[in-house]
Image (cartoon, helix red, strand yellow):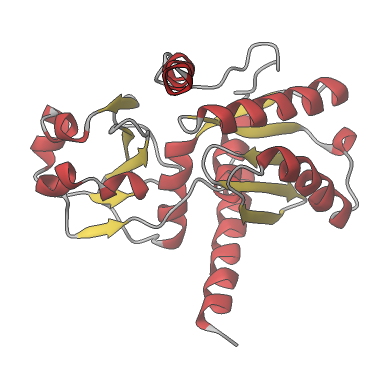
Length: 264
């Protein structure tokens, strides 16, 4: 069998151990959580059920509307589970693609409202940090996660390398050159792990550390450990209170302006 197959098996084992440790430490019965994400070109769903984690991940640029609901149906059917069996729904709340976040939010609203379920918003940047920690349990350096925000900007945030990564900074959207000038990053003196496709910008080269993991997407399976931990702490929300996090409020306006300009 291929090295890729064995790598995927190891990742699944690590995720299962993470989730089981979280639940056993808090002495709380196994929860049932569905997670969805469509914040980038990737589209993913994951299910935590009776201590087992399953997931579906696809690169589905511009196909989120067609793929996300069928993926939810597929993963629930495979587990012989219904929405009514769940305890909560987690979702990638952003930052990320404006369109993808809206699509995911709309689907989560419909599912959660119909089944009367609470929701758990999960940072896409934190989920990417979680993915690295899951695959690199011995790492202890901070994680600087960056997503391409288009318009020559990136979304970024700094996280710890704890089992459940915690935020060491707020989440921002800014020009790559401005990121290099941030005091918190300058003080790290390249003693951190760089994660995410946002690191492709040349203006970030002055601060690129020794370890750079660029080919990474937000993934619903890595939202599960974060969601289970949040659920066990009672950190759920009503679907009526949950909102996406865009960081750039003017994104839709700027897109409409470009379309109008091109049509003139």
